[in-house]
Image: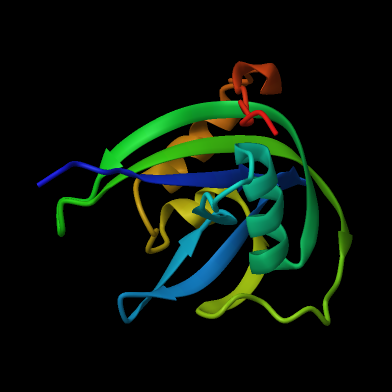
Length: 149
């Protein structure tokens, strides 16, 4: 069997000491995550973070830095995830926008509130803690190499 980790993105967005969180249904359970999801074909990692944030929270996200790149293997099923986590700001919000299937709501929560919730993975709190420690890598860390047209 060939090992193929899932490539995912996430967005850590802070406003007034609270973080934008997504409550979602995953595997029959309600869990919390940052706006996050899989990289789609023909999009950059930053574009994926912008798209996922909009689809899951109805907020427009502007990536400003990378807080980290994380590799995690789910001990329950052996699936591996390679997550690139961005931080930045969000401004425009469309409360009438329909959220992705499985998304129950978006909300703003403190780190302490988040720490006692059922989380989608341990990467959720690790991304927030790295952000709070001031870890910021420039967006230029990532290169999107396009095929010649």
